[in-house]
Length: 148
Image (tube, rainbow, N blue to C red; front, side, top):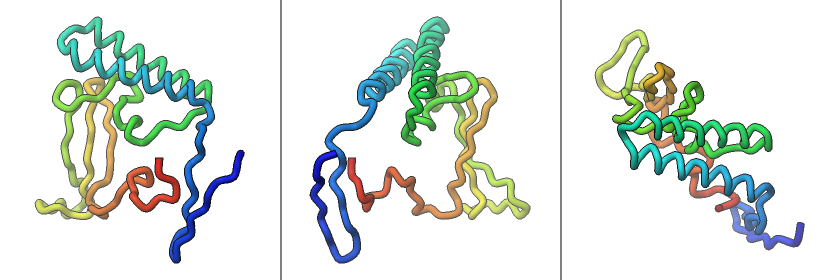
């Protein structure tokens, strides 16, 4: 690795991101497979054959990721169903709802609210949303040391 410039501020030391990313060709292939799958799922809505092709692209993406031990962004992980390898699209093959299974089950937004994604196959993904409304994923935070 070459020398990287270091910017210092009173609170944080910031380092520039690396110029080259390892396994760049694999990440490009994953991106391409995700884009083609999304295109097929969006454009050809009613055909089961095209959904099967879209799901096959997601399966290929997952097998490439596993073979090369690559980490996907949390946003990409939330887009796919792990059980049926389907690209999740609200209203088409996924239902979204906010549930509160706490004892007191309040009607107002409470600390126990959970966002639930239900796929056509019956699998549910659950994301807590009530505890801290200002919570952001590490990737989404603006004051990261490395901006990409």
